[in-house]
Length: 372
Image 1: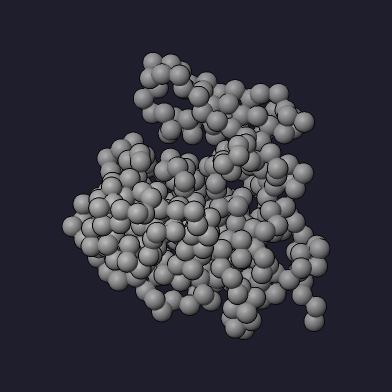
Image 2: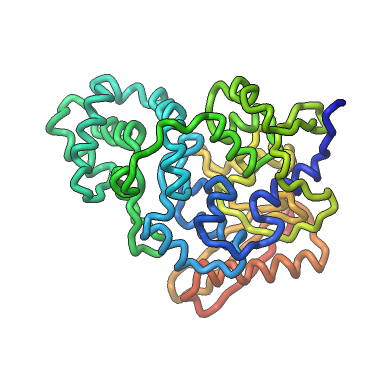
């Protein structure tokens, strides 16, 4: 029997269901992070935005508490990008992802000429064994006398990429200092990182969080190579579908796949939200003709986006000139909305800005004219 075809709206609703964007759930922070496969958080504030959009009754203090207690951690993870994930997932998958994270070294060849990675990594572990958090610059400065020919930026990069580190939580507004300070992951977690977790187990987590997925989607989500071969090994556990272009999609038998006409409420996402970035083919959540608008600078920064009917419908930002100034959330839509949709956006935006700027005395919500 030929695999059943899932149309784009069915794939959209499946993704939203897995990402807790169809309906907020009253779940702990760590449980939500596990369900959605972790959250890419170059900026620590983005974790607050992402979880506010996913958790019913989200309390920012609980996110900071979860970080402070070690239930969740922030560090290099999927795609060699900074993620906020559960401590269990980090311990289970950080070593299988080491090949992905180490691949970033190829972009820094110019600073590795005088660096023996193994020797520097050993020195980093010894340095951080005192459990004193240090910034990348402080790590490099402390190592410089041992490696006088190595450039400081190379030593800092080697530490962050080739030694499993986590960012030390602090009492700062978003839970981490700027710049971040690092700790040895195993010492902070109080346990060994697992070296026995298979690539197949990692891909099953990706399918559960973002499926149904093609081989290319899983490669994009994880950054791993050899995805096709790994999928063949775990194929007996999976169902196979096709998308409208005929590509094979893999999924867990019991995973949610809601109807295409399932209502999807408006939602606000962070800069690098996994719901938007996890697939090679992102048409299930963003119109391909509009995807190019998300890169807004040469360093790959992206727009903060919002969803209408489950799809990216525009960008948003918060502006506040000073502590005494009003806090303004400004939306730039791609199209005009109905009055009811505008009302929903206004309501959601008002709640979001109050969470992000709790000490403001005045709030403004602005919907700009559509950008064609």
